[in-house]
Image (cartoon, rainbow, N blue to C red; front, side):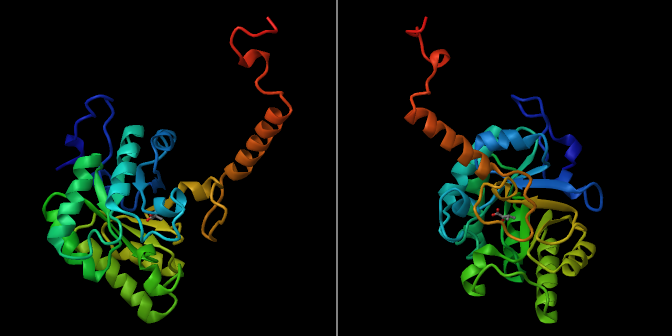
Length: 280
Ligand code: KIV
């Protein structure tokens, strides 16, 4: 299907980007991506982003989980629905959570179809590798657009023993390059490349015919993604690869402290913040 043939949204009159649009951006203007989990945040990000990822990082960022392994399909669907409601133009991709796609391709398909039908999102993302390639092909051949994710794979944190950058050792480099190739050859429309040596990210970008989306990777990737809460300074800990564009944690702390003091000193509410006030 040509991206040109996609109709505008029935209620918005705005045509939402989809997998073919992202595919066409290979080697062109970098693709702007951020994570989103809620409708109000999606609304703020929509006009600036080409792609919003409902990442399973939601488990750590919003639900206080220690890693992404506890995230369920139901959580992803709920957040996917919210992001779809809040956005109009950006392509929305929903992460398949740990345990929902690694088994039989038929089970992965049933779960992916649930995500697509119940959220209305344009694609799903899987943490890919050579072992998942057959499942990616199975999904894509049946109408589910898939984004891959190679390099540092957060769902493999317990196997890897932590969130560790990859691609310094030649064997590991070869394996990640092979994962990326297998993912693209299976039909993924784009591949997230996370936490790898800069040279490897560039090698992968050159080797694939589909766009790479870097996170902790290289400015040479076809697009970039960050966890929105990280770049806004909302999360207490900032990984090395994140550039902080705001200090919302500091802003919120200052605002809440000021509110608490006003309440305790009976300065809030003031005369203009009450109905039919005594002050007239
Ligand atoms: O879950 C997530 O937010 C992600 C991004 C970090 C790429 O997978």
